[in-house]
Length: 233
Image 1 (cartoon, rainbow, N blue to C red):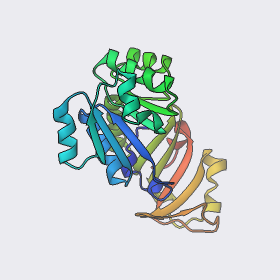
Image 2 (cartoon, rainbow, N blue to C red):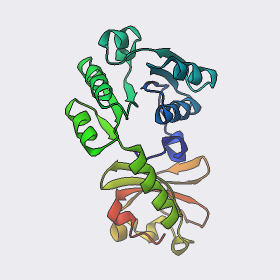
Image 3 (tube, rainbow, N blue to C red):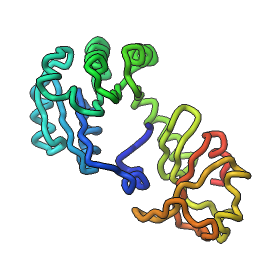
C-alpha cells in the first residue's frame, strides 16, 4: 500500500461512499495519514495519549474530530465509538507493547479492517499474530518509492496489491505512441491488463480496444511486478 493513496489519481475517481476512519497515534506518520484522508474528503477521528498532539491536529485542521485517550484500554476505545468504524489505522509504530495491545483490542472488538504501522520485521509478525489485516512499513516503503522514482520516472504511482503484484499508473511509453490498445497486445506480450487510460483526473475505464495511445497519456495497468518491469519505460 506503498503506496501514496492521496496522490493515486485513478482511485480518486473510483472512491465509493463517504467512509469514516480513525487514526490512533498522531506522530509524523499518523498526522500524514490524517491530513491525506481529510484532503480526500473523508471523516477522520484522530486519537493520541498525548494531549499536545491532539490539540495540534485540531488546530491544523488535519482531522474532523480528535480526542485524547489511552488505546490500550478497551473501554476508552468503545466510549469513543472507534469499535463502530470499518477501518482503523494504528500508527503507534515506536511503542511495541502499546501498538500490539491496541491492535488486539480492535480485532477482539470486531473492527473489520485494522491497518497497523510496524517499526521492524519482528513487530510486523507480532501485529499479524494478533490480527492486523494490513501491516505497513513506512520507512521501507518510502525507500522503495524513492528508488522507483529515480530509476523509473515514467511510473507516476504504484499500488502494491501484495509483494508480487501491483497496479501502476505510468506514462504511455514512446514505443507505444500511435498504436491502438489492440495492437499492443498487453496481455499476450506482457501478461498485463489495462484498466484505464486518461490524463490528469479524467480516466476512461475499460477503454475501447481501437483507441490509439499517445505520449502524454497515462495508462493504469495491473499485473505482476516482474511483468511490469518488462514494459519499455
